[in-house]
Amino acid sequence: RAILHGDLRGEDVIVVSNREPYIHQYRRADGGIEVQRPASGLVTALEPVMRACSGVWIATGSGSADRAVVDANDRVAVPPERPSYQLRRIWLSPEEEAGYYYGFANEGLWPLCHIAHVRPTFRSGDWAHYLAANRRFAEAVVREAKTDDPIVLVQDYHFALLPRMIHESLPDATVITFWHIPWPNPESFAICPWALEILNGLLGSNILGFHTQFHCNNFVDTVDRLIEARVDRETFTVSQGGKLTAVRRYPISIAWPPVEDMVGKPVADCRHDVRAGNGLPPGQLIGIGVDRLDYTKGIIERFLAVERLFELNPQRIGQFTFIQIAAPSRSSIDEYRHHEEAVNALAARINARFSGPAPAILLKVEHHEAARVYEYYRAAEVCFVGSLHDGMNLVAKEFVAARDDERGVLVLSQFTGAARELPEALVVNPYDVDQCAAALELALAMPPEEQGDRMRLMRRLISEFNVYRWAGRMLLDAALMRRRSKLPDNPV
Ligand code: GDG
Image 1 (cartoon, rainbow, N blue to C red):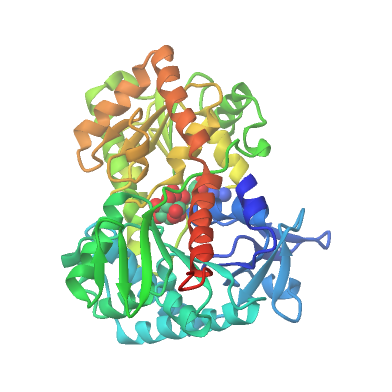
Image 2: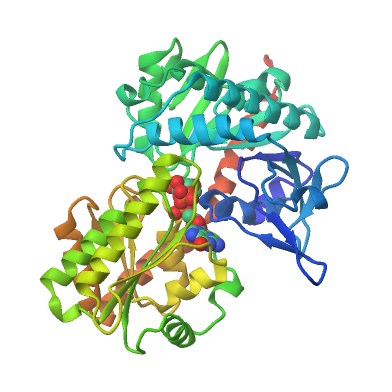
């Protein structure tokens, strides 16, 4: 955290993401405005960084009361309880949002980059909106920049064209782009009709970051295969028309130590309240899943594994309940609505087969406060992260951070970035229902000493490789580049 305060003091820092960190929802009866923190891994990771270094965060306005709180420049100071940076809102029309966000970003790029066997949909109308929305955010960056060489942190697949646009208007800006989702192999990526535009857009960045080396390799292979650029595999840089982009691995993480509000309630009270609040008996064994309701998260496969657990271990019926927190997400897209129906139907079918005195599966499709999510983490015997494909997955790290009692077992999909850092979890293939069921049983039967050994190793790793280090390493690399570029060309 010191790096962020120290090295960035006086720097002109701008973050751009689609999702805003605070959503002003509605005016309450007492006159105050209800503010929600969205369920988003990107926001979870970047918000503590922005609190530490201040600056401006540009994002799409999304709450019904968002317009009511901004000044004439569409800015509001946040966090609401202790303002330390500016949130600058961009207003998109329903058509722009449908084309740029739901259409190209979430029906095109999201399935293109995740191997979850959902076919991407590409429409030229969506692409036109994507291009226009990127242009609008680029204009906002130029307006918000206080100097001609700001540091701009561009976030995610919504803004693949933005780095090049910023570079054209502010050639001295340092653009650090972070791609929060996987990058597929060149054959998969090449089906996108605008693959070249996207690659050229991203290569406007000075630094392009991914969670894993595997995604960096895939990106560099894609560039090598599809466009005219010089790729240096020793230094992992791409140069195109005199512009150099460093492709680097920066595994994202969470704040450490965890925020006091999240872990302040004693584990015993969390255990009691979660069981009592859900009508479960005091000694009930609990498994927990926490995800946006998204087909890449493997919720269906997880439920099938729970069903198999009961088939193979009938003594667990009525003794074990799997609680799935599923935050509604992108529900105006057909694929997501169908997925929600399938998840509901499967939970009902398994409950009809296997509920004893307590249900087999408790599916909670609603947004929960972050402190409530942590209460569930602290109450559970096992946390099951079953993503079919995931850039990193912060739920895995949050569960570990929540367990200062050094108890609880993490079952973790091998297709998450997190599995590369947390080998002490029970690492599974989420498509292998039998293996996942066996891992669940192993977790439920694991002796406390072994739980403690595994948990301590994972906690040590996350405490060291926390989100401040993620941001700090990127910004240090950027600072080094800036210093180098300011040296005279011929210092003789
Ligand atoms: C993308 C990449 C990458 C979930 N439900 C609720 C809630 N959450 C919070 C979790 C966690 C976050 O949302 C989800 O983070 P993930 O990392 O699991 O997933 P994505 O949103 O898909 O994030 C992912 C991430 O970006 C960061 O780079 O790790 O691979 O896909 O923090 O706790 N939070 C609240 N209520 C909920 O109901 N408050």
